[in-house]
Amino acid sequence: MTMADTKRKPTYPIVPDLRDYLTAYNRETELPLVYEDLKGFRESIPLHDAKGRDTLWETVIYDPEEMRRLNRDLTEIYAVLKVDGDLSVMQHLYVDRVDFCTFGNSHPFRIRIVNSYNDNQDYYYVKKADASRVYGLELEHLLSPNRINYLTCGTNLVEEHISGIPGDVFIDEWLHSERLNPVRVAKELVKFNERCFIRLLGDMRSYNFVVDVTPDFEGVQVRIRCMDFDQQSYDGRKNFYLPQFFKENSQLAVYCMERLNRTTALQYQREEQALIYRRLQISRERLGRLLAVMGDDAIAPPENVGALGDSLAEHYGNPAFRNCSSMGELVAESLETLSRNVRRHDTDTAKPVFDFR
Image (cartoon, rainbow, N blue to C red; front, top):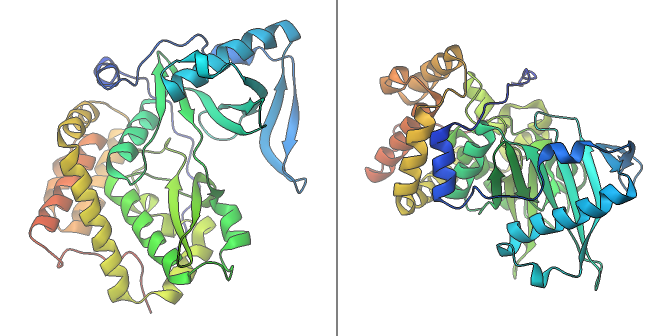
């Protein structure tokens, strides 16, 4: 089964209650530059990768005087993001390049920062703020094994770079590498699939996630990390929240099915559910406040909420999903269902994430 392309979703503003949440947890801050300031470039040049392929990014060029101002302000933003604004340890950094992408929803600017002492480089992104993305970033920070560093300023969003091999590149060039343990790769896909589904993060096609490859004392470990959160709890189709169903991920899904049997896959699925439950317990107060705000925020059309609620009710055998009136309430019910099942070690409601032969 494959997933059809999704229509571009609208951008949802950050409502006052969400702004209060962001302020309370030190996500909202003043910045010397906003997204609109970066749109004054005079020309752009297509950016290609090392093999000459179009990256869908364009390197933008500013007037020299404007670039000097941008270099100062963008370096300061990097300091705010990384070291709480301490410029004393950032004097040797400079902005080497600014890239712009019109592909996708957020139309981000990507800033490349370089250390003049050793030429080490880092990236961060400046985007227009979207409430859907902010909810996605927060849920990733609280419920996944990954910490997420980002800031908001009014209608602006700044995110640090998430390192890893782009999913499509990993599938084409790494998936069948002898350096990787096939079972470890398959296990991580099962766990990633479960994380996305539980917190209702959609559109995890191969170009919307990265694979972090880490050498270990016995072989290589892999972790799949989301890098695009625009489709947090928007679509009404259940399978949109299961990465296995996108045609872009089909090779990865088949790879998994060929290497795991149903019993082992269910084991890994339950392991991830238990880990999410533990993270939920640790961050219960903060997560509760976030879900309360999200529950009152209209970040999807009512018909999408109804369709997804019906599908989840059928999937879990839980009619409570049909009573949810917002995507935030659906996420909360999903987490509550998870919690009940983990507490009582309920395996009857565990659904296999792949149909094994």
